[in-house]
Each structure stands twice: as structure tokens, then as C-alpha cells.
Length: 330
Image (tube, rainbow, N blue to C red; front, side):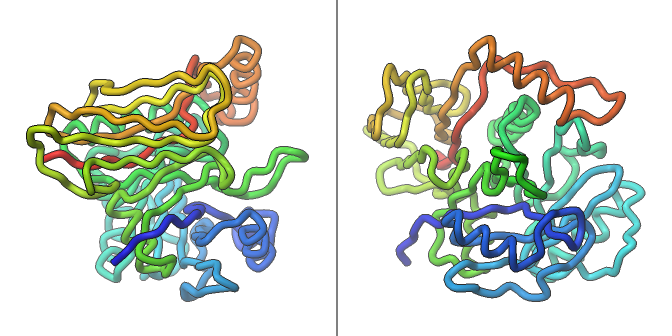
């Protein structure tokens, strides 16, 4: 079946937990942002009783299991327990997520390296379908999440990487919804097809619905597919809306097989590249921070993205603007 690109947000809150918008206000906002799907994930509360479509926007049932040890999203099926939940240790979390999975839910670990509310359990030993590599507007903690996920790719683990705005409210001119945006390559925007695409790693995560996009293929293979390594196997990457200074990088495992730095704004850039190693191909767009931008980010991370008494992250020199899930090379 032919697939299409659908824009969405995996991590949203309403007034049923600590968000500023009622459910239907949030849904209308998602429509205005041009999203095709959205997952409402209130803290320990089942806001969406059953996934449904609203004027073409797919609203997917979800919930964020929220405890001192970490935050975990459950998508697509009701959590089969009633709050307050026992979230005292990893086994208590697993009891809930494993039963949810049996009922058809998708499990995603949220912001695992957040300086404000990190994942305090054994991340490597926690069963998950997806991981939130990019949480809310871009900041240094997300670089740690990306590095952990890439390490899992190097180990051959298939974990879908997603982004979630963790939307609670906007801040004056700072519009938080769908920043970042997860764009799935799915058969349709039905709940089942969107969740399948997220789990299979058929997604690109980018800064916003209007932002840069990366199209990555290897011969006829798309994101999430596997293709056999052979003589003459080639990949193709197309990146859109590259601002001056943006760096497009294509990786064959840990090795850069193509790199391009935009010297001026480029509406579209396309390149072909060879592949020599089994493993995976992925692509990302990065940008370096100017000294004033780094100081501003450091101030924001210290004052708004770090819990009281915690050590703020070392502010990054470079951040990512968009990235793809991999194509697997066998």
C-alpha cells in the first residue's frame, strides 16, 4: 500500500492534568497548526476515551505515566489500571506498561536525559517501542537523548525515535505546540497506521510543521525498511529549507558518508552517496550556536529547564534541527 507523510505531535497536555487548554481547544489549535494527528497524553489521566477523527485530524488516545522515577507515554489503548498508580520502582512501571502493551498500546520513554525530570531507572533495561529523542523546544539535553538512541542503533536495536512538544501552554511569542513535529510515513492517518509507523521507525522529526524536511532512501527502500548490502547500492537524500550555516550529514553507522553546509538559504538540496557497511543509514540537519545564542540558551536551560538544586546541562555548541529514523542495511 502506498504511504504518505503525516504531521503530528506525540506529547500533549490539557486542563485534565497541567495544560492550559481544554481538550477541544487543544484539538482546534492542532488543526490550525496543520497537523494530521495528535496524541493527548495527560499525566496519569485518560482524557481521550477512544481514538477518533475530528475534521481530518486523528486524535489518538494516550496517557503519560508520571512518577518521580520517570515519565512514560502509553499510546493507542487505555491504561488498564486506575490512578493513583504504583510507580515506586522499575518493576511497578513494567507491570503497567507490559499489560498496556498486551492490550495493544505503544510504549515510549519520554525525555530520558531531562535535567528537570529525568528517567531515573535502568533505561537500557526498560522495554520500549519508541523513545522521545527530542522533547519541547530544542536544548542541550536532547543531544544526550540522540546520542543514547544512536548507541542503540549501533547495537542493532530497533527503537522508533520520536519528538514531542510536551505542550502545556505558549509563552507570549514563543509558540510551543508541535515544536518539534514528528512526520510519519504511514499508510493513512488512522490511529493504527500512525502508531505502526512510529513503532517501525518510519518518521522524521523536525523543528516545526513548516520547517525543514529530510527525504532519505536507499534504492527503493524507505525509512524503517531493510535492504541488502550489495555492489552499487546507493542512497539519496533530499533536504528542504536549509538556512545558511545548516549542516546536512548522512551517516552509515558512525561514519559520515555525505556532508553539505549551506552557505546561503537553499530551498532544496539533493545528493547521492555510496554505502559500504552493513548496519544503517540515517540523516540529520545540525546547526552551530553563535556565542550570543549559546549564552541565551544557557540562561534558559539554567532557569527554566533544570529543577531546583539540580546541575544544569553543559550548554551545547551545536544542536540538531531535524533527523530521520534509519534505513537498515543487512
